[in-house]
Image (cartoon, rainbow over all chains, first blue to last red; front, side, top):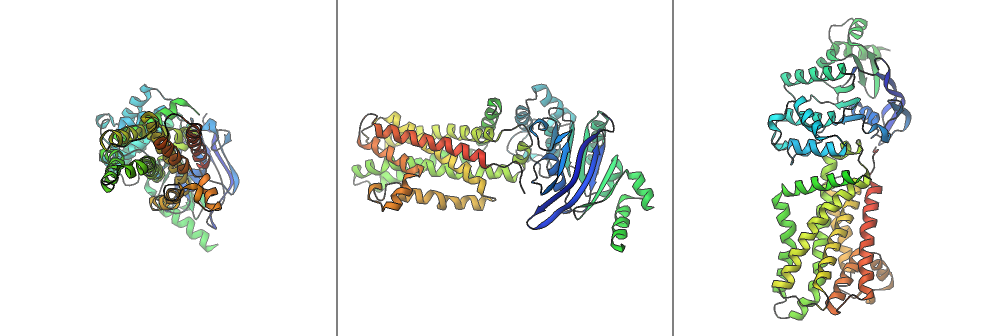
Length: 240
Length: 245
């Protein structure tokens, strides 16, 4: 599986309300890697992720996931998605939420307990989700995304608003998931999370301004952190 | 369509309703309080109560369930859970049918309470069978539910969804034959009235009020209301979009 292509985006155009949100974007995501999608808020990250899931209406171009068109029925068991919202039911307990989504995915009762342990929510399993902290709620959402052993995980800003300790724990978990052979595409606007990715896609105004490994990106731009690299790339574009 | 997924949706919606006792209490109590109010208004004339009681027994649950159904699916949209479900192996029909079944269960309890109250305590006299009256009341509430599920596809916010109530429900109340007998409506309005579900619901109730037994007309009304339920579910599923702009 290593180094084969999990997601292939070819000449993607998305136009919404007369605005080109993504005016032509191509990239490929390799299997078993953590690909970080970074860029300022409003640059089209969510639109690109929704295109990979197959929830976005495309104006032109193709998105292929695991060899079939994005959004194909066969992918609904193999690809999971964490939206920017928590996307779980606040008025249900953690276990009720996970159990409901497990029955939608035909995942067994064992899977329910397993994912709650993975995200360390066992001790609050009976608590209502809307009574939990923001960080715990994000983990409920992540637990749901882990159900049914998906091959590709698409995570839209899963660490937003979390404290640094929790953010580190989550990134350790992403590393572990990738080490197990899963492909992770994760968006963030926190540039310092970039160093934990295998590959970085830097996005600005709907276009990719970089598509590289973090180390190579820093070398190429002669900078020491991703934020400076981002600024250097934007500066170079504006000079041109 | 997968039965286990539909059932999972039904169970989940019922659990959520159980967690919200205030909504449950309103769903069950409001139609009853309105019927009691009606009885009080017509305290001088039992005949008048017998005349308007059955149609309103069709109308109140219809309105209440329409409102609840049109707002709950929007909550699902706003919380992001709809998007998540549609990225999973969730059939569009599974979701709509799951909701419809859950609300149908509520409608059943609602109808049992409302009919027991009006027939048992408020002394409503009807010529037809009380069991059929209950069945028609349940069907009316379910048709309100499916209509609510359908129109919620056209609303982006709760504000918009609530506006569908005067736009979609009030014309049905005006044209259903309670204010002006449907036969006396001008030709065009009579035609409009012929394609609205509440007209058949009220017609069935009026037949139950005046004549005993199952007449052909009553059977036809029940069949039409059931047809609207099926159509509402099918349209609700068809208008749900996986891919959105």
